[in-house]
Amino acid sequence: MDGSACENGQMQTKQRIVVGLSGGVDSAVAAWLLRQQGHDVVGIFMKNWEDDDDSEYCSSNVDFVDAAAVADVIGIELEHVNFAAEYKDRVFAEFLREYQAGRTPNPDVLCNAEIKFKAFLDHAMRLGAEKIATGHYARVRFNAATGLHELLKGLDPSKDQSYFLHRLNQAQLARTLFPVGELHKTEVRRIAAEIGLPNAKKKDSTGICFIGERPFREFLGRYLAQQPGPIKDERGRTIGRHQGLSFYTLGQRQGLGIGGVKDRGAARGGGDHAPWFVARKDMARHTLYAVQGHDHPWLLSRALVFDNASWIAGQPPAAGACSAKTRYRQQDAACTLSATAVAGSWRLRFAEPQWAVTPGQSAVLYDGPVCLGGGVIAAAEEYEPDAATGLAQQAPEAM
Image 1: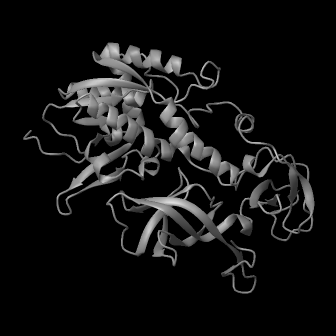
Image 2: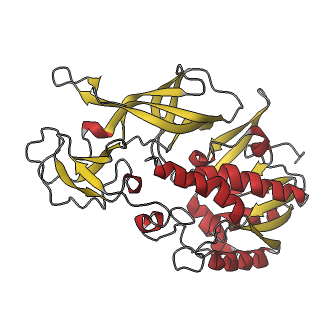
Image 3: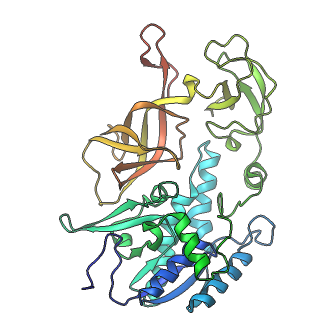
């Protein structure tokens, strides 16, 4: 090879590359692939949480042991670095502020932007690294025509993680490799087993790292005060009590405590036995609204406004047609991008109604496989179907 970049942005000349080893199989195979290509590979294990790390739910000690075992098999050095202070200041504090305001943040997005591709990247550069690498399912491509680095979806559609990486900028992408972005998960596990990695069959981690598998409301209750209030249906009837608006998210079905309540007269509710979903939060009146039926109009939105935008190219794309996700693991939805009258605020109008669009979550834009960037959902415009025409009309109580 002549040293030119391939589609994933990987240079074929030997480089010093620092890999974030999490203890999982994806980062392990990423490190092995780079080692096979002849690079000088160094592993770093990032400790991002330590408040209750001795608990059964979120123990980084086990992950570090796994990462060390992987490093031994691959034949690379491993350094343990503590970023817990940076994580608490840059990620967790914002996480709590958003929940306290009644929104539902996505800390994984902020963690990538502030820790894995900022604090970790800075540390790697101090170690003399030319690039960093992680086990994310995404790709980086340099576009010679524009002179810009592009963030692409991973080739495995069921594992693509570009949604969580949409806040990365040109400087970060220029120094980042995603070795497993070209592979499907099944192939990653096959490689791991073939080369004898000790974590080849390790279960994928789920949820937020500092929460792990523990009950979410129990964890959040350590940091936010419980302020109970009424749960009401679409007609304003009280049907239950909530523990505090911060502990619920739009579209939530479990944990409402109203499973036996029936809304017999609701024309739009989906029937007597249809499940209840969180549909709205009234922060001023401290009231939670729930509706029956997955496709209740209060759960559907044709448009949203987002702010705190971050664009991969360094500037926003042209207004017009694109596609977007309003939550991870969602199919791309056709929409139209336009600027609002407020500087830094943008509007997306979708061709089809979107389900449970949630303030605090990320709206991420795409042009085919290319991730353009996105921002934080500030509000969703709720719509009611018009009985006569079947067309969606804006509800009078829409945000």
